[in-house]
Image (tube, rainbow, N blue to C red; front, side):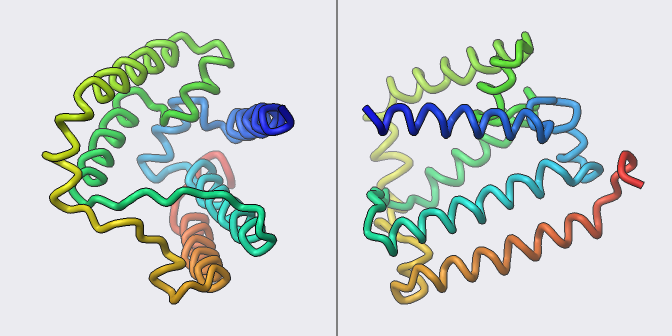
Length: 180
């Protein structure tokens, strides 16, 4: 029961943070995609860094329980294209859609309905899609830690270096008319 409340609290806290960041505003999201406003991309990169640090900490403490799914180049590439098209059309990613619905944005209700319909459609055709899209380019369960010789701290260092550099670069290169 504690896990449920911890998950509920974590989800509410994350929803609050993405709402305060402006990620539930499709206009601000569009400005981020046009490389005009840097706040949302920097927030997302920082969220990855903090999540990776938390996962590494839990792993080193022996309390992390993760399941690594196999990587498929074709399936992941196609999913990324569909994800990007959906995000571009509605102005929300899946997490921000839920937060925007909670905020009362009616356009997000339709985006959420479309996302749920797409999920149901995928679930219906999942048995057919696995051999067609997933199996041919299945690389097995590969992680960054595996690629770096099994050292999770090295993986965290690489993520911090790359994503931290991206956060710095976005702040330096993207023009933000709202922040003079």
